[in-house]
Image 1: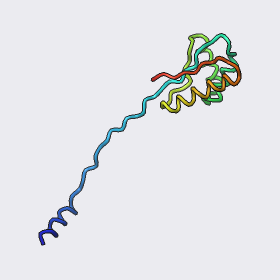
Image 2: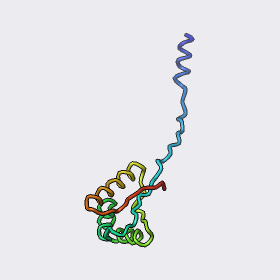
Image 3: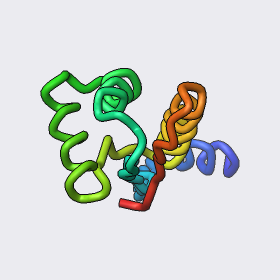
Length: 106
């Protein structure tokens, strides 16, 4: 009989859910760096193709790269940023342009 009382006591126990604080993954900026050889039109194509920018948005970022030496293409988790930077660099090399695409922690 004692074990039955113990069992009914255990059945009435309610466990409070544990709160776990989940951190967002660190974000990284993907940047294009200015050079003297890559045509502005090519930079606009890259921004539209890899970062889904409109022509207007791409032109603004391209001018920022041209005038300030670098421009932010987007902010992503580390693996997405690395993939985009590598894809842009490969695309630029395939078209024989020295366009540099890098990432830095946001």
